[in-house]
Each structure stands twice: as structure tokens, then as C-alpha cells.
Amino acid sequence: MKFIPCLLFLLTLLWFSGNGHDCAMAETTDAPGLFLPEATHDFGAVCEGDTVRYPFIVQNKGDLPLNIIDVKTD
Image (tube, rainbow, N blue to C red; front, top):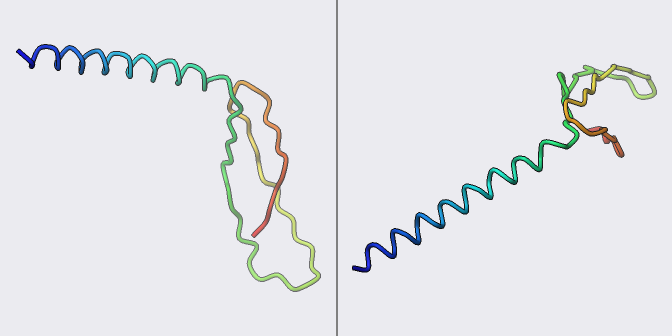
């Protein structure tokens, strides 16, 4: 007799956890989406004082504007 209430409880728990997951995924669709086709670049040997440049392509594949606040190098 205890089997049926436990089964109903587990099914209810699974139902609500599944519905919450769908809602959470729907909320995250409206967000910026940073995409870097090439995240790193090896400049090779660079002498101290030399200036080196490389254009990194940054794409926003999301729905909202992407604001880049801070960039750090290695």
C-alpha cells in the first residue's frame, strides 16, 4: 500500500522538475552569445619592445547586445 503514494510522489516530483527545466531554458535564450572562431594565437618569439598585432574576430551569436568590459592577456 505504501508503494502507490511513493510512486505518485516521485512522478509529481519528476513532472515539476521537468517543467522547471523547460522554463529555465526559455529564459536563457535572450542573452548575448560570445563566439570566438579562434580563441588563441601564438605570436611565436617576440623581442622585448616589439609591437605585435593580430585581429581577433569576436561575434555575438545571441539575441542581446554583447558588451566586452575587460580583456586580459597571458
